[in-house]
Image: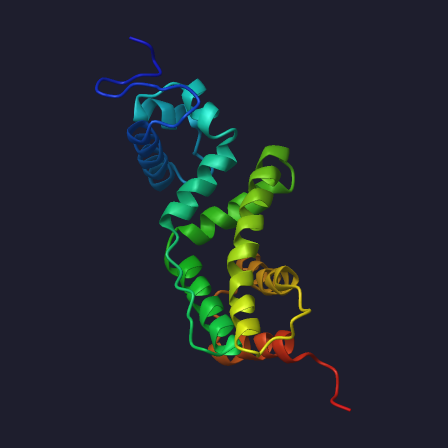
Length: 198
């Protein structure tokens, strides 16, 4: 039997076999839980999932790509829809900080960002993930446009980048216990601007 196929599962080429993909992701979660980020390897995942490394690399081109999928699978961050852009962004950031602080996901994502500084594959995986997340956060801004709170010419993705840079700085400096008042002040600067009204 090929090492790509465990009993009861068969490889179906470049198209993902959902059963095999789930087994690989579950194995990756288990390796990450037991060995941590520094002990995580595709070899360990392949052994645990009883899958071949070529299969894993066919579906995830790098260790970082697999880790980002594990991170996304574990991520449970509510995006509020309160009817107010400021409250939505404050709620989103508060929920994100709590998720990063209270689950292993914060350490995983922090390590991915660090690895992306010196590893091209990690940088590419993180860029792809960030693009999708920019669109997700941008939808909060687009809802504000629909309600007439946000000017029509505002670029939602730039606003999303500003919010993400605030969040990532707090993650990378391990300051995820920021109080809501401080988060609200930062969001207010983004939403209302910092220039004096004329």
